Image (cartoon, rainbow, N blue to C red; front, side, top):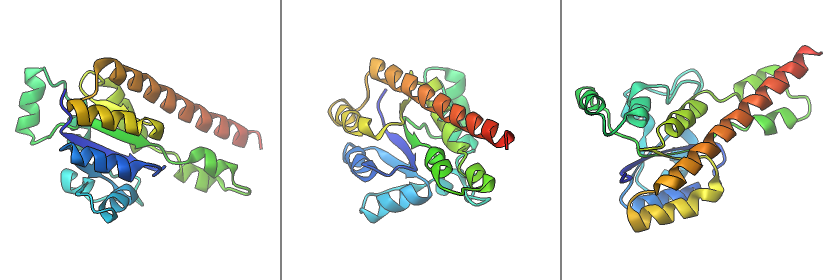
Length: 197
């Protein structure tokens, strides 16, 4: 599956600008959010703001930005299903072929001395895991990258082949589900500790 469009939205910005540059040089359109978009744009790489895709601003202090059919439809569409293709055309949804997401730094937040419950709660990511899970579910057609250590190898495949091979997409999906499972376990454990107080 040729990668034409990527959505990049990361808390850990390590390597993301170089990754976006390599994707752009391979002809991939970049869509991004908030701080990630700013970093990519400041590096001189063309980037489309997610609000320009959704037609809706980031709201509620950034709690709602990617939870939108233009994003999730673009990720979840089964590209060889004629009905999905028809619905994408009918609703003007463009496919998203690669998703690079890592989640709000919940672990780092709760490790801070005297962190409040409210601060911890604000670092529970919702949109990120939703995109990660959507892309991982649809790994037949979408590449999900949650680990910055994978950026170079993925960019290399896209540059050489225009796509990422089937086995790698499945490996990345497995990594993505492990990532969200560990994230949710950390939140569950933190709340369990709070209940003991």
